[in-house]
Length: 513
Image 1 (spheres, one colour):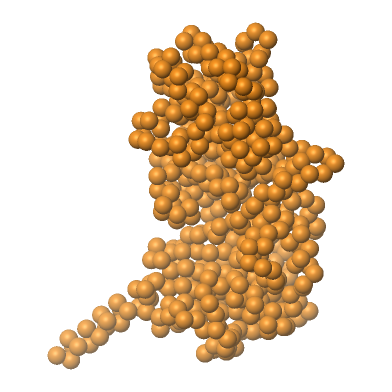
Image 2 (cartoon, rainbow, N blue to C red):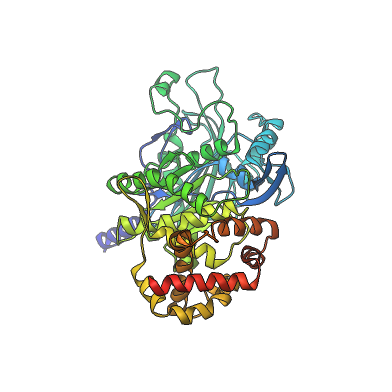
């Protein structure tokens, strides 16, 4: 009986042992210290700050100015990494080196003005109220008053405090590493460990104590200089675009599996496998800058300039993609997020070609949003041209080739007369109307929209006197002026007779093609 009781007791101990464990410390150049991570954890990137578009008029003309949620800018700079393991345990690490903005909720700023705001209110690491305010702002849960932890003295930490929370499964610590160089005073950091409901919190606390807090350390300055350089470039950055690029690079700097690759006005963030990355990211960075120039020729912006940087985020699978964009987007394979100013997609099982075609499609939406000052354009124009570029490629001479979507072309050719009668209503549709109906109906509208864009790009330039040479430029100008997709369409056509002439030219083209 005693032996049986002993075996049962051992079994209970084993089943209550926490699955949450930590790796050996890993050098994080962006943080300037060695830091353990959750065993088996992968990156769980945080959202980019929400943006609002402002149309600014100056002597140089009108330009789009992005202004971002101040608190979102602060959070994206402070939170330096978030990781999640397969059991749902999460580790969040933040650098407490600046004060959260003392502004009304929802206040927006450019990155340059936000930097000036931060510089006007410097963070004092010796000031407890500064530390606590930054910790409260960076933490995903509400914090109580700071208290000394059970073991406050740590060999590699000059200071350590704990923040109590109402969440029983969440542990929050602020720590300040001890530097080998006495004259150096490292920043405060925040670590938030959120354990899954199945974890035993006594064991979790023990592992956090022994495997995480005791393992953090800063090497000597000489050793640090020989290690990888930080991603963030030193010195003052000159433009909004420079700051945006730096923030995008920094957003993945501490994730081992993620990379940031830049080319002209394009930056790709991805966690693809190495072989896929080499093929896909190279194709995007080689071709998307060229395509964006052709987007601009096809749908020229009336603005004198924007702060546009094409941010493309590629996840290795659909599960990670949905974790980031939300389970309600399960029906999507990719999306352009105008509020976050990024194009998000995942690598499909069908392979690289499918992914790249998706990029060319969604990247047009991204371009058009900036070119039209974030004003909603007509779905016939937006989706039609996105489809046009999805079916395009560069030939050996580097010239753009607009491929025919064979199925769409056959459909439009067969039903051209009937579709011509529907074009006036399609020109008037908003997105709710365009996407209404069953899949077959929506697919038919996409085909018609593609046929309009294909006609404007391939057929219209061959017409005598080129009557539609400025049609798309007129549409874009009217869109910004009227801030209405329907009024923009009406102004581009001029009057009902001109619209009917356009439909007749479209019909003649598709009857022959």
